[in-house]
Image (cartoon, rainbow, N blue to C red):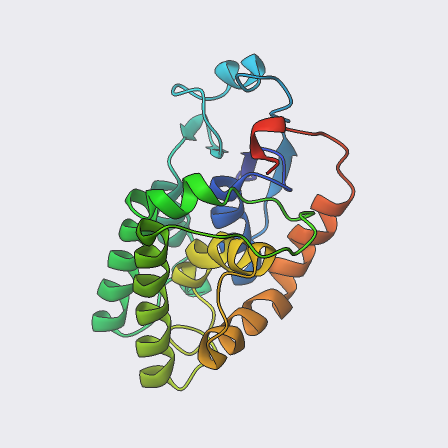
Length: 215
């Protein structure tokens, strides 16, 4: 099979890129990655040569380019069904996909107030009620599923749904947004996952600064 190539943005900042990268890495899928740094005020014009929509991430495989995060994960899951990017049980797969879709389309207040920045010096961020409502909804998802599955992840083993919430874990951690013990346990499990640690190690080596993502 031809190699997979995943184009991503700055690993320190790009929450959209983190999701499929972590999902594929955690599942043991072999792929090459290339960072296209967004170190210009309006992004990097170089991405237009790769992505129809001018956004990252983009997966390239056998002449096909896929530029949407959930579509990337679904495509790779079809290529490698044995890698179990989704839970094995049908009901859990349906829920996992629903949560990924909700994550991809929702929680705008949290995104706007707390941009992902892995080198942010872990400082408390004051939030409004819209952000607080986003946090409550996310915690409800995490608590309910971890309690039902037995953890440590949403459906027991790490899957695409956990990867989709990984940038939220980073945000909660950077801005000290949560203190519920069950939330912190789930966050710790995600942060300690080798795929997350590999992403964070790469991010720590970056020197690019994106002013609009620096609070």
